[in-house]
Length: 319
Image (cartoon, rainbow, N blue to C red; front, side):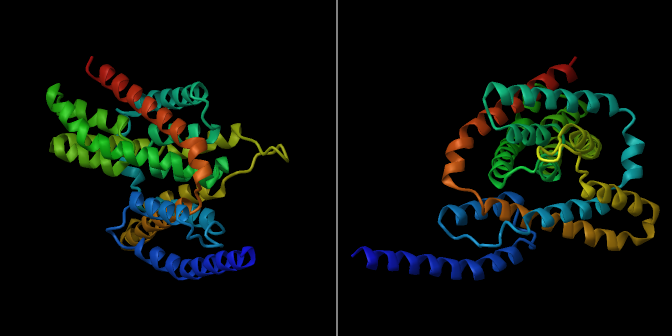
Protein backbone atom coordinates (compact mmCIF):
# COMPACT_ATOMS: atom_id res chain seq x y z
CA UNK A 1 0.00 0.00 0.00
CA UNK A 2 2.75 2.44 0.94
CA UNK A 3 4.69 1.63 -2.24
CA UNK A 4 1.59 2.06 -4.40
CA UNK A 5 0.80 5.33 -2.69
CA UNK A 6 4.37 6.58 -3.20
CA UNK A 7 4.22 5.67 -6.89
CA UNK A 8 0.89 7.42 -7.27
CA UNK A 9 2.17 10.61 -5.63
CA UNK A 10 5.34 10.49 -7.72
CA UNK A 11 3.35 10.10 -10.93
CA UNK A 12 1.06 12.95 -9.90
CA UNK A 13 4.04 15.24 -9.33
CA UNK A 14 5.44 14.33 -12.75
CA UNK A 15 2.10 15.12 -14.40
CA UNK A 16 2.06 18.52 -12.71
CA UNK A 17 5.60 19.20 -13.88
CA UNK A 18 4.66 18.29 -17.45
CA UNK A 19 1.62 20.56 -17.33
CA UNK A 20 3.69 23.37 -15.83
CA UNK A 21 6.32 23.02 -18.56
CA UNK A 22 3.65 23.84 -21.15
CA UNK A 23 1.53 26.19 -19.04
CA UNK A 24 4.27 28.64 -18.01
CA UNK A 25 5.42 29.58 -21.55
CA UNK A 26 1.76 30.09 -22.53
CA UNK A 27 1.11 32.41 -19.58
CA UNK A 28 4.33 34.33 -20.26
CA UNK A 29 3.02 34.88 -23.78
CA UNK A 30 -0.29 36.15 -22.36
CA UNK A 31 1.62 38.58 -20.13
CA UNK A 32 2.69 40.40 -23.28
CA UNK A 33 -0.94 41.25 -24.03
CA UNK A 34 -2.37 44.56 -22.78
CA UNK A 35 -5.34 43.11 -20.87
CA UNK A 36 -3.05 41.23 -18.45
CA UNK A 37 -2.22 43.74 -15.71
CA UNK A 38 0.67 43.41 -13.22
CA UNK A 39 -1.82 42.51 -10.49
CA UNK A 40 -3.39 39.77 -12.63
CA UNK A 41 0.01 38.33 -13.55
CA UNK A 42 1.15 38.26 -9.93
CA UNK A 43 -2.13 36.63 -8.86
CA UNK A 44 -1.88 33.92 -11.54
CA UNK A 45 1.67 33.12 -10.44
CA UNK A 46 0.65 32.85 -6.79
CA UNK A 47 -2.35 30.62 -7.60
CA UNK A 48 -0.24 28.27 -9.70
CA UNK A 49 2.40 28.05 -6.99
CA UNK A 50 -0.05 27.37 -4.17
CA UNK A 51 -1.81 24.66 -6.20
CA UNK A 52 1.48 22.90 -6.84
CA UNK A 53 2.08 23.90 -10.47
CA UNK A 54 5.67 25.11 -10.39
CA UNK A 55 8.24 25.38 -13.12
CA UNK A 56 11.69 24.23 -12.05
CA UNK A 57 13.44 27.10 -13.83
CA UNK A 58 10.91 29.84 -13.04
CA UNK A 59 13.14 31.55 -10.51
CA UNK A 60 16.32 31.25 -12.58
CA UNK A 61 15.55 34.10 -14.97
CA UNK A 62 13.31 36.26 -12.78
CA UNK A 63 16.05 38.67 -11.68
CA UNK A 64 17.40 39.09 -15.22
CA UNK A 65 13.96 39.79 -16.68
CA UNK A 66 13.20 42.21 -13.84
CA UNK A 67 16.41 44.20 -14.25
CA UNK A 68 16.21 44.26 -18.05
CA UNK A 69 12.63 45.54 -17.89
CA UNK A 70 13.65 48.38 -15.58
CA UNK A 71 16.38 49.40 -18.03
CA UNK A 72 13.95 49.38 -20.97
CA UNK A 73 11.46 51.52 -19.04
CA UNK A 74 14.03 54.32 -19.14
CA UNK A 75 13.31 54.81 -22.85
CA UNK A 76 9.80 55.96 -21.98
CA UNK A 77 10.84 58.75 -19.60
CA UNK A 78 11.06 62.29 -20.95
CA UNK A 79 13.81 63.65 -18.73
CA UNK A 80 13.79 67.16 -20.18
CA UNK A 81 10.07 67.64 -19.59
CA UNK A 82 10.22 66.23 -16.07
CA UNK A 83 13.18 68.41 -15.11
CA UNK A 84 11.44 71.49 -16.53
CA UNK A 85 8.39 71.02 -14.32
CA UNK A 86 10.18 69.63 -11.28
CA UNK A 87 11.40 72.92 -9.83
CA UNK A 88 8.17 73.73 -8.02
CA UNK A 89 7.65 70.22 -6.67
CA UNK A 90 11.24 69.32 -5.82
CA UNK A 91 11.20 70.31 -2.15
CA UNK A 92 7.87 68.65 -1.32
CA UNK A 93 8.98 65.51 -3.17
CA UNK A 94 12.28 65.37 -1.31
CA UNK A 95 10.59 65.83 2.06
CA UNK A 96 7.77 63.36 1.41
CA UNK A 97 9.99 60.62 -0.04
CA UNK A 98 12.41 60.91 2.87
CA UNK A 99 9.65 61.03 5.48
CA UNK A 100 7.80 58.01 4.07
CA UNK A 101 11.00 55.93 3.89
CA UNK A 102 11.92 56.73 7.50
CA UNK A 103 8.36 56.10 8.69
CA UNK A 104 8.23 52.80 6.80
CA UNK A 105 11.42 51.60 8.51
CA UNK A 106 10.08 52.61 11.94
CA UNK A 107 6.71 50.90 11.36
CA UNK A 108 8.51 47.83 10.07
CA UNK A 109 10.26 47.50 13.41
CA UNK A 110 7.07 48.16 15.37
CA UNK A 111 5.17 45.46 13.46
CA UNK A 112 8.21 43.17 13.59
CA UNK A 113 8.00 42.77 9.81
CA UNK A 114 10.83 41.36 7.72
CA UNK A 115 13.37 44.08 6.98
CA UNK A 116 13.27 43.68 3.21
CA UNK A 117 9.47 43.69 3.11
CA UNK A 118 9.41 46.91 5.15
CA UNK A 119 11.92 48.56 2.82
CA UNK A 120 10.06 47.40 -0.28
CA UNK A 121 6.67 48.63 0.95
CA UNK A 122 8.20 51.93 2.06
CA UNK A 123 9.84 52.37 -1.35
CA UNK A 124 6.62 51.53 -3.18
CA UNK A 125 4.66 53.97 -1.02
CA UNK A 126 7.24 56.75 -1.26
CA UNK A 127 7.86 56.67 -5.00
CA UNK A 128 5.81 54.78 -7.57
CA UNK A 129 4.46 51.49 -6.31
CA UNK A 130 5.29 48.30 -8.16
CA UNK A 131 7.91 49.88 -10.44
CA UNK A 132 9.91 51.16 -7.47
CA UNK A 133 9.64 47.82 -5.69
CA UNK A 134 10.86 46.05 -8.81
CA UNK A 135 13.80 48.46 -9.10
CA UNK A 136 15.13 48.09 -5.56
CA UNK A 137 14.39 44.37 -5.11
CA UNK A 138 17.62 43.25 -6.85
CA UNK A 139 19.62 45.70 -4.73
CA UNK A 140 18.15 44.31 -1.52
CA UNK A 141 18.49 40.77 -2.87
CA UNK A 142 15.04 40.20 -1.48
CA UNK A 143 13.40 36.80 -1.79
CA UNK A 144 10.45 36.14 -4.07
CA UNK A 145 7.95 35.90 -1.22
CA UNK A 146 9.14 39.28 0.12
CA UNK A 147 8.69 40.89 -3.29
CA UNK A 148 5.30 39.24 -3.66
CA UNK A 149 3.89 40.48 -0.37
CA UNK A 150 5.14 44.01 -0.95
CA UNK A 151 3.53 44.02 -4.41
CA UNK A 152 0.27 42.50 -3.16
CA UNK A 153 -0.04 45.22 -0.51
CA UNK A 154 0.60 47.94 -3.09
CA UNK A 155 -1.85 46.54 -5.64
CA UNK A 156 -4.67 46.14 -3.10
CA UNK A 157 -4.21 49.66 -1.74
CA UNK A 158 -4.01 51.03 -5.29
CA UNK A 159 -7.40 49.58 -6.13
CA UNK A 160 -8.87 51.05 -2.96
CA UNK A 161 -7.31 54.48 -3.55
CA UNK A 162 -8.70 54.72 -7.07
CA UNK A 163 -12.22 54.64 -5.63
CA UNK A 164 -11.71 56.33 -2.26
CA UNK A 165 -9.58 59.35 -3.16
CA UNK A 166 -11.95 61.07 -5.65
CA UNK A 167 -14.84 60.55 -3.22
CA UNK A 168 -12.92 62.11 -0.32
CA UNK A 169 -11.73 64.93 -2.56
CA UNK A 170 -15.30 65.87 -3.51
CA UNK A 171 -16.51 65.58 0.08
CA UNK A 172 -13.76 67.94 1.27
CA UNK A 173 -14.16 70.22 -1.78
CA UNK A 174 -10.47 69.99 -2.60
CA UNK A 175 -9.18 72.16 -5.42
CA UNK A 176 -7.84 70.53 -8.57
CA UNK A 177 -4.29 71.51 -7.57
CA UNK A 178 -4.52 70.13 -4.04
CA UNK A 179 -6.11 66.87 -5.18
CA UNK A 180 -3.55 66.38 -7.95
CA UNK A 181 -0.64 66.79 -5.54
CA UNK A 182 -2.32 64.62 -2.92
CA UNK A 183 -2.98 61.80 -5.37
CA UNK A 184 0.63 61.87 -6.61
CA UNK A 185 2.00 61.71 -3.06
CA UNK A 186 -0.37 59.23 -1.43
CA UNK A 187 -1.30 56.80 -4.23
CA UNK A 188 1.31 54.20 -5.10
CA UNK A 189 1.31 53.32 -8.81
CA UNK A 190 1.35 55.87 -11.62
CA UNK A 191 -1.58 54.16 -13.36
CA UNK A 192 -3.82 54.60 -10.30
CA UNK A 193 -2.64 58.20 -9.87
CA UNK A 194 -3.61 58.93 -13.47
CA UNK A 195 -6.95 57.18 -12.99
CA UNK A 196 -7.82 59.09 -9.82
CA UNK A 197 -6.74 62.40 -11.38
CA UNK A 198 -8.83 61.77 -14.47
CA UNK A 199 -11.88 61.05 -12.33
CA UNK A 200 -11.42 64.29 -10.43
CA UNK A 201 -10.74 66.69 -13.31
CA UNK A 202 -8.46 67.67 -16.18
CA UNK A 203 -6.27 70.00 -14.13
CA UNK A 204 -5.94 67.44 -11.34
CA UNK A 205 -4.94 64.87 -13.95
CA UNK A 206 -2.18 67.08 -15.35
CA UNK A 207 -0.78 67.97 -11.92
CA UNK A 208 -0.99 64.42 -10.57
CA UNK A 209 0.75 62.96 -13.62
CA UNK A 210 3.52 65.56 -13.61
CA UNK A 211 4.28 65.26 -9.89
CA UNK A 212 4.21 61.46 -10.11
CA UNK A 213 6.72 61.51 -12.97
CA UNK A 214 9.02 63.64 -10.82
CA UNK A 215 8.68 61.14 -7.98
CA UNK A 216 9.42 58.24 -10.35
CA UNK A 217 12.87 59.67 -11.03
CA UNK A 218 13.66 59.31 -7.33
CA UNK A 219 14.13 55.60 -7.99
CA UNK A 220 17.64 56.53 -9.14
CA UNK A 221 18.97 58.43 -6.07
CA UNK A 222 17.16 56.11 -3.66
CA UNK A 223 18.71 53.08 -5.33
CA UNK A 224 22.17 54.62 -5.08
CA UNK A 225 21.64 55.41 -1.40
CA UNK A 226 20.60 51.81 -0.76
CA UNK A 227 23.74 50.60 -2.52
CA UNK A 228 25.87 52.68 -0.17
CA UNK A 229 24.01 51.61 2.97
CA UNK A 230 23.51 47.92 2.22
CA UNK A 231 26.67 45.85 2.14
CA UNK A 232 27.18 42.24 1.26
CA UNK A 233 27.34 40.18 4.44
CA UNK A 234 29.94 37.79 3.06
CA UNK A 235 32.41 40.13 1.36
CA UNK A 236 31.56 43.30 3.23
CA UNK A 237 31.80 45.23 -0.02
CA UNK A 238 29.43 47.34 -2.07
CA UNK A 239 27.88 45.68 -5.09
CA UNK A 240 26.77 48.30 -7.53
CA UNK A 241 23.47 47.52 -9.31
CA UNK A 242 24.62 48.07 -12.88
CA UNK A 243 21.09 47.90 -14.19
CA UNK A 244 20.39 51.23 -12.46
CA UNK A 245 23.31 52.80 -14.35
CA UNK A 246 21.96 51.39 -17.60
CA UNK A 247 18.52 52.73 -16.64
CA UNK A 248 20.01 56.23 -16.35
CA UNK A 249 21.89 55.78 -19.63
CA UNK A 250 18.69 54.85 -21.48
CA UNK A 251 16.93 57.95 -20.13
CA UNK A 252 19.80 60.21 -21.19
CA UNK A 253 20.19 58.49 -24.57
CA UNK A 254 16.49 58.77 -25.34
CA UNK A 255 16.57 62.50 -24.61
CA UNK A 256 19.78 63.18 -26.58
CA UNK A 257 18.44 61.43 -29.69
CA UNK A 258 14.70 62.25 -29.75
CA UNK A 259 14.47 61.42 -33.47
CA UNK A 260 14.33 57.73 -32.55
CA UNK A 261 11.14 58.19 -30.54
CA UNK A 262 9.22 55.50 -32.41
CA UNK A 263 11.82 52.91 -31.47
CA UNK A 264 11.86 54.11 -27.85
CA UNK A 265 8.12 53.53 -27.62
CA UNK A 266 8.64 49.87 -28.55
CA UNK A 267 11.47 49.46 -26.03
CA UNK A 268 9.38 51.10 -23.30
CA UNK A 269 6.45 48.80 -24.12
CA UNK A 270 8.74 45.78 -23.93
CA UNK A 271 9.94 46.98 -20.51
CA UNK A 272 6.37 47.37 -19.26
CA UNK A 273 5.33 43.91 -20.43
CA UNK A 274 8.62 42.40 -19.24
CA UNK A 275 7.82 43.74 -15.79
CA UNK A 276 4.46 41.93 -15.94
CA UNK A 277 6.27 38.69 -16.86
CA UNK A 278 8.68 39.17 -13.95
CA UNK A 279 5.78 39.68 -11.53
CA UNK A 280 4.18 36.45 -12.74
CA UNK A 281 7.44 34.57 -12.09
CA UNK A 282 7.84 36.22 -8.68
CA UNK A 283 4.35 35.11 -7.67
CA UNK A 284 4.98 31.58 -8.90
CA UNK A 285 7.57 31.02 -6.17
CA UNK A 286 5.49 31.87 -3.11
CA UNK A 287 4.45 29.22 -0.56
CA UNK A 288 1.87 28.81 2.22
CA UNK A 289 4.67 28.89 4.81
CA UNK A 290 5.76 32.29 3.54
CA UNK A 291 2.19 33.57 3.66
CA UNK A 292 1.79 32.51 7.29
CA UNK A 293 5.11 34.10 8.18
CA UNK A 294 4.79 37.46 6.45
CA UNK A 295 1.26 38.03 5.14
CA UNK A 296 -0.55 39.66 8.07
CA UNK A 297 2.42 41.78 9.17
CA UNK A 298 2.95 43.00 5.61
CA UNK A 299 -0.63 44.21 5.26
CA UNK A 300 -0.63 45.83 8.71
CA UNK A 301 2.56 47.67 7.84
CA UNK A 302 1.40 48.70 4.37
CA UNK A 303 -2.03 49.91 5.45
CA UNK A 304 -0.63 51.86 8.42
CA UNK A 305 2.04 53.55 6.30
CA UNK A 306 -0.48 54.36 3.57
CA UNK A 307 -3.02 55.86 5.97
CA UNK A 308 -0.43 57.99 7.75
CA UNK A 309 0.99 59.18 4.42
CA UNK A 310 -2.45 59.97 2.98
CA UNK A 311 -3.77 61.81 6.05
CA UNK A 312 -0.52 63.61 6.80
CA UNK A 313 0.05 64.83 3.23
CA UNK A 314 -3.57 65.98 2.92
CA UNK A 315 -3.34 68.01 6.13
CA UNK A 316 -0.14 69.71 4.92
CA UNK A 317 -1.53 70.41 1.43
CA UNK A 318 -4.77 71.92 2.81
CA UNK A 319 -2.94 74.52 4.91
